[in-house]
Length: 144
Image (cartoon, rainbow, N blue to C red):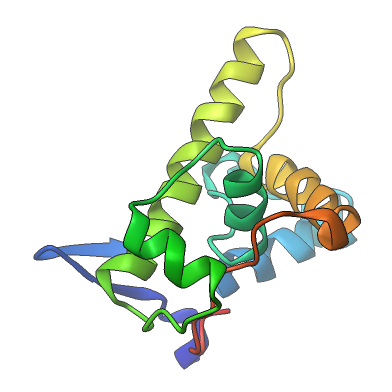
């Protein structure tokens, strides 16, 4: 499936997101509540799903930021080219930030997998969608 081949080069290095493949696995896990077909012993190896709603929420919460040019493009809903350095930096920052959040929560006794944290952030972003001060970035492609 082309939509599962979510990888690209970033500054000469191969970067892998596999967002749709990870969502598929996460959905199977969630649908079966981690039992039967959903019993996946390494579900904790998945990262968050690098898409558009979570970075929108993280930008709005001032947890992540970009340079002025990228901020302007996001605020003005200018298309950010798929697989460009700008798009990859948004998606990478999202994955790294969610991992740091997960580790910080664990240090405080709250143990979540990255996909559980992803689900919680996604749901918050959807609930607060109409009040988020920053729009989501606009990227056309097959990985969203």
